[in-house]
Each structure stands twice: as structure tokens, then as C-alpha cells.
Length: 367
Image 1 (tube, rainbow, N blue to C red):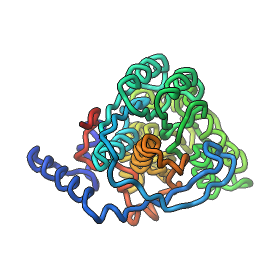
Image 2 (image 1 turned 180 degrees about the vertical axis):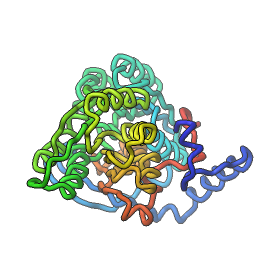
Image 3 (image 1 turned 30 degrees about the vertical axis):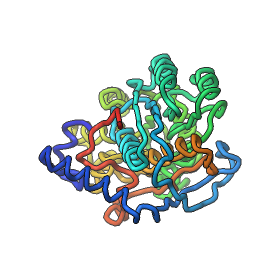
Image 4 (image 1 turned 90 degrees about the horizontal axis):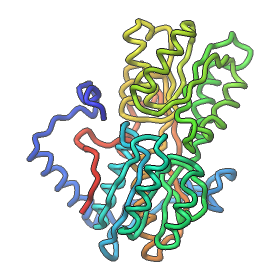
């Protein structure tokens, strides 16, 4: 999380002393290892055949492992850890790795443009690991490397969609469904036939696998609504990168009615519109959910965002990796149900599966 976010008042603003923080983590670990955790189950969507989002999912109660058979070593590769979304994925993986008693080593590519760096990272870390979890920076760009790695160890895809060649299991939702969900939310507010609403659309990094799927879900909904898409800007999901794109669009189209984009786009838009005195004139929708969107929805700064429960996706990915190693993998493709969160439901929304707690810092090693 960015430092300025930590200063905001919210459910997640908690200042722990260092000793107390360590005690809290220890108590949480003991609770998770207690017999009660054996009864835990996660309601998830599942796809059969796996990795095929063209069919509607089923729903099961996924019962995670409570301990690994041995102290496996798992490498997890992320596109980056620059925003709270991947911090939440990181928390889910770290939490479940500790519960199961396995080692976890995390690497991050520094952003979606860094395909070659991620290829080098997964090639290197897989040599000393029993399994690989990969949040891909590209849908097709890792295929050859993963094909080679999968000959030696299981490979689990996490969050971002990817070419299924060499993939053992997947913890992910349909990003097309994510886009469709927020597009339908917009269309319900502004149905076709009503006066046109000017929209600026910020999909994210053009090469990232999830972006094309979000667009495939979102754009048909917008085209069947009163939306007039006056600008589209692709770019990395870093705060500064999105801020520059927003400034560029507002310079060219000062009369837009809506900004729709990533959670980072929404964070940047809240700050920029406040600075320009435009918070009442331009509304914001995000196509995924983070700490920033949670706070902004609660304060009425962002209308809505769909959550795909990134914490839970991280847990599932670790569980699948261990099951693949131990021969008990039966659910090869699972993901949390998507839910659109707006101000009407924010007070009753449970955040535990979606957002890392405030005390959690990016963690790269679990021993």
C-alpha cells in the first residue's frame, strides 16, 4: 500500500507496536492451526473442463488442506506488488503457506511491460522449488518457459489468465465476467435510449492477459447502454502512470461524465478530481476492488467495483500447488464468486477474503 493510503481513516487504519504486531501474527497462526480450521471451507466457482471460461461455472464448498505432508518449497511470481490488489494476493498466499507449513518464495517482475524479467525469474526460482505459482504479465509470452518448467514441477496459474499449455491448475475468475459485471452496473444506471453519457475508459496494460478479457466483458454492456466512449487509454497499473493518463484525457475531454478503469485508475481519479474540483461532476467506476476502492466507495467517491476476492485466490493457489505435489488435486480450476460492491452494500460487505489487513507488509519469504 502507498504511504498516503495508510494515513487515511478507514477500517484498515490500525497502528500496532512492533511487539504487539508479532504477538498478533503468532496468535493468528495458532488459531489457524487449531482443530476448528479443519472445518474450514471456501464457497467457490469451478470450471469443467478446467481453464475454459466459455462455460458457466458450478459451485462447490472447497475444503482446503490443514497441513502439508512435507515442507515443500513453492515459488510464486507476481507481475508486481505496486498496488494493494497484489498485496492482498500475497497475504492470502503467505497466510495459507504458514498454515500448511510450506516454504514460499515470492518474486515480482516490477510491472506488466517486464515480460523478459518474469521469464528469467520463473526460470531461476523454479530450479530450487517443488512447485511454481505464476501471476502472468502476459497471456502467451510465458508459454515456452512454462512448458519447460512443467516437465519438472507443477505450475499453478493465479489471478491472471494465461495460455493453458503446461498449466497444472488455476486459481482465477473470468475477467470477462469481471468486466461484464461493472458494465452491467453502468448500463442499469444509464440504459440505452437515455441521453448520452461521456465515458473515458482506462483498460490497463495492453499486453496483460486480463485486459483483453475485461474489455470483452465490459464493452458490449457499454455499447448497449447510453455510454459514449470518448477516450480509451492503455497503460501500466502504477499510480503515477494512471495519473498521467487521466490528466491527458481531462485536458482533451474536460466534459466527460464517467471514468471507468482499474482500481489504481480509480484511486488516481479520486485524487485528481478532488484537486481539480471535479468530484461532483465526474463519476468513477473500478473494474476490480482494493483497499482504496473500499474507502472511496464508503465515502461516495467511487460508485462501485466488483471483487474477485484476491486474498482467497492466493490461498487457493497455494492449496492447489500442495495438492498437485501430494497427488490429491481434484479441483484444477477454481475461483471466488464475483460480487459488485457499491455504497448500498459496503457496510455489510465482509472484507476478509478481498483485502489484506493494514498490518500486513509485502512478504517475499515464508520459511
